[in-house]
Image 1 (cartoon, rainbow, N blue to C red):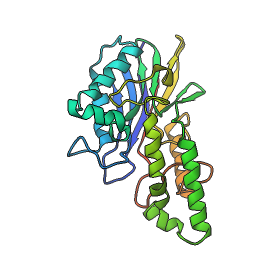
Image 2: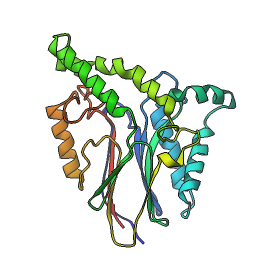
Image 3: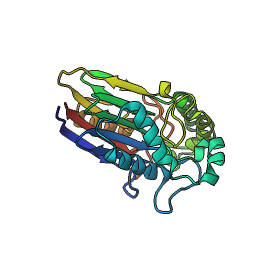
Image 4: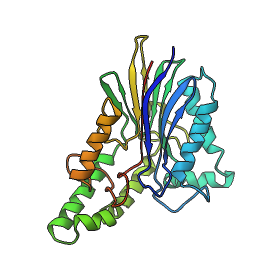
Length: 271
């Protein structure tokens, strides 16, 4: 079975910062990795964000893993790859403070296993079927932020331009985001160097028909069968609702001067 890349894109949310998303392509695997934006000041690298560092660790592991690796082996192996970046003295602290861990979501296609592996908040199209693995609580927090902004705008406490310069509503929900991270690898899965609950992951097994597959990070709020369509829907969102508080609600705004509200990665291929 061959894998034919049709198109791909990797765009940082800010033109001044390297992306925390990544795309990995080998002879046997295609993956999209979404490094999580830090919610605290804790850093494991002097030169890069935690999200980008974690993305690169996972990418390096995928690029070197055996072609016939099974999902459970991948879960254990990628967990250990991140775990090795922690000092022994940090483990007890990180166990109690998941918000400070190196964290990422990832979606991986295995050519040999003919499977798509989903850990954390990622999405894909397999033919006409859409799959995702969203974080719990995210919608609730996004709705809370939208309500805060609605009050700010209605009462004249802020303007759209001011919120695009500094999203104070996001500042207000950061404690909620950190609180939900206490459930990381308990009620939802991520790659963070700690045990991943298999029942919070998702595996899609494909038959032996030809398939067209799209793997993407959550930087695309409306995933479509082509990159052009996905970019077009994203562009409409950024123009019509830059604060992300209406049809698509998010925990952060499209900041003025940025490329989008989040990094984005997209790859379409045939098998």
